Length: 141
Picture 1 (tube, one colour):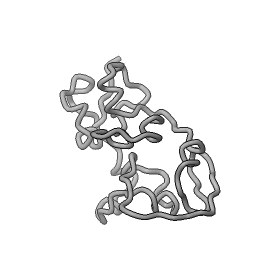
Picture 2 (tube, one colour):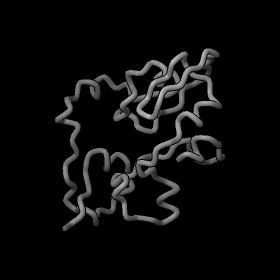
Picture 3 (tube, one colour):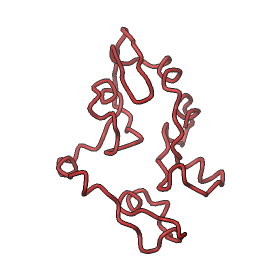
Picture 4 (cartoon, rainbow, N blue to C red):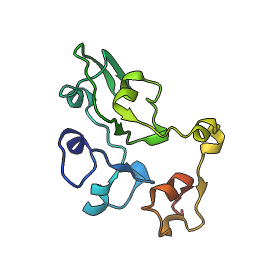
C-alpha cells in the first residue's frame, strides 16, 4: 500500500481494498497481496510531503502542516469507505470521498457489526468486498 500510495500504476487503483481478514489473513499469494490491504500503515508524513493538503491535517498516523493549500478536481475514494475513522477531518474529506448515503449515516454502531458467514473460512465469496462488509469469516479452532 505504501508504494501504491506514492506511485501511480495504470490499471491499478491508488489504494487497495482491505482484506476481510486484515492482519490475520493467511493467504500469502502475491495476487491476493497485490489486490488487498492487510492493515499495513502508510508512512503518512513521507506520503503527504509530496501532496497539497489543508493547513493542518490530522490523522491517526500523525499531523502535518502545510500552508500552500490547493485542491482541485474530483476527490479520490477513501480506501476505508464508510468505515473511515477520519471522515470528520475536513482536511481528509477535502482529498478523499466517502459514501454519502443518508441511510448509512443513520446506522447505529451495533448494526454495523458483521454476522459470521455460514461457510466460514471456506466461503467462496471472501474476495467480494460487499459480501465481506456484511459477513465475517472466522477460522475454525
